[in-house]
Image 1 (cartoon, rainbow, N blue to C red):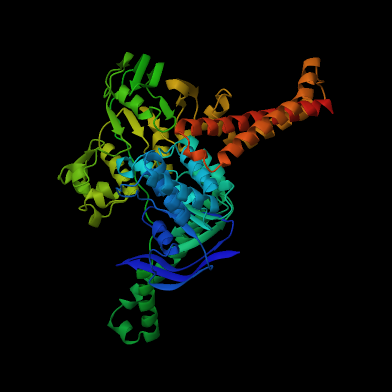
Image 2 (image 1 turned 90 degrees about the vertical axis):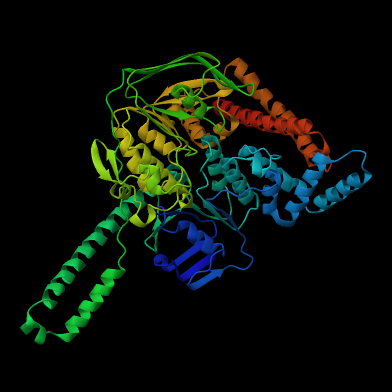
Length: 633
C-alpha cells in the first residue's frame, strides 16, 4: 500500500538544482536506503517528504493520517529539558503527561498534599490512556541507547543529543520513519540493537547511512540521488554497485558520442565565408539546441584524491604497554593491559561508548599518564592524530586558513602545491575555500581535517572515528589508502565493514576494564571471542547461532544417546520452566501495577533487571529442552 508519492518534484537553491522532476513512491513495509555523495541533497529530500521544505514545483501525495518521524543529521540545540522529556515529546499528548508525571515523581515533597493530589490525578489519566505500557517502551529505548534519562540536554555531548533524538523518533512508532545517519556516534552494541529493532519494525523506513553493514542488513531497496535525479535499484548493495558501474559506463559512452557530434558541428559553423553563405539554417538551430543541452549537463562529481605523506621509518617497536591501569572518577577504564605495537601494525580498537577507547589513544600519545604501569614509546615517530571532536579545526577561520594559515603555497609529499589545487583534491570548489568552517557539513569537516593531516609527514596514524558523515565513495577510497599505508595505524571505529577491510588485529574493551587482543577485524573477533557476551550481543547473533546449532544437532542425533543424568535433566525441565514462567508472570504483573513507578528507583531497576534475567534463563532452558528432546526421539 502506497504511503507517499512524489510526482515531478523540483527544488533548487540559487543556481544549484538538487531535485529535477523527481518521481518517488514509498510503500508500507519497505526499508529504503537513500544513497548519494555528500551535498547531493539527500537531507533536503527528507525535509521535502516531511513537509518542512516546500518544492519549487511538482506534486506530493500523502496518505490521510500519515504519521512521519524524522531524525535529522544535526544535533538539537541547548534546551533546559531532560532527556526523558525530549524523548516523551515524540508521543504527543500521552508523552506530555508522562513527562509531567516523571518530573513530579522525582521532585515531589511528601508533605505537600497539593503535589500528591496532582500526582494521583496524573496517575489516573495515564491508566486510562495505557500510559504505563508506553512508559515501558520509553524506558526500554533509553536503556538500549544508554541514555541518562534525568540529564539535561544542555549538559550533554553532541553524540548523546543525537541518540536522544533517535530515541524520540523510535518511540512514536510512526507509519513512515526517516533516519538521517542514525548510526553516527553509536557503538557497535547499540547499532546491533537498532538493526534488530528496525528489522522487526512494521512501518516504512527510509534511511541515509554510510555504514555498509547496516545498509546490507536492512535495505530492501536502494535509491540513489545523483545530480538531481532519483534512480531505484531492487536488490542488495552489491547488485547496486554493479548496476551503478554499468550505468556510469553507459553515460560516459553517450556523453562521448554527444561531444563528438557537437565538436563536428562547431567545426562546421566556423568554416569560411562561402560555407556560411550556403549553410543550412536548420542545422544552425540544431547546433544551438546541442549547446543548450551540453550546458544543462551535470558532470559526475569527482572523487577525493587522498595521498598520505610518509615520513622515514620508525623503530621496529612503536609502543610497549606494560600492566597499564587507568581509572576515571573511580571507574576502572583500563585494567592490567600489556601489549606491544610493532611498525606496520594496523590495529582496530572496539568497545562501547565511554569504555575508554579514546583514553587508550591518549595514553599511547602521551597526553595522559597511567595510574600504574608503563607506556614506552618507540623511536623516530612522526604521528598524526584525527580526533573525533575535530578540535584541530578552527570553526571561525576559513577552509583555506585551516590548511595553510593564509599561505598560498603548501608542501605536500615534498613538492609545492597551491592551496586551491590541493583543496580541489578533497572536493572543495574555489568558491568554498574562503567560507568559515562553521558553515560546512559534518562530512565536509571530516574531509577538511583529513586534508589538514595529510599535509604532514607521518609514519604513525591515530584515527578516532574518522568515518562519521563521510559518503560511501570517500570511505572506500580512505580504506584503499589505509590498506596500502606502510606506517603504523591505530583506528577507533564502529563501522564494521571499515574495520574488516583495514585492520589486521583488534583491541576489544570487554568487562571491568579488561582489553582483549584478537587477530583480524570485526568479523574475526566475533568468531574468536568466548561465549560470554552481553545478552544484547547474544541476541544480535541468535539466528546465526541457532542455525549452526541445528546443523550440529542433525549430525550428532544419529550417533548420540542420552545418558542417565541427561535423561533426568530432560524430565525435570518442564517443571523448572513452568516455575520460571510463573515467577516471570508475577514480576510482570507487579510492573503493570499503577503504583509501580512510584517506588524508589533502586526497587524499580532491580525488578526490571530480574525480569530481564528470567527471560534469558528461560531462553536457555527452552534451548536445552529442545536439544535434549531431539536425542530422546
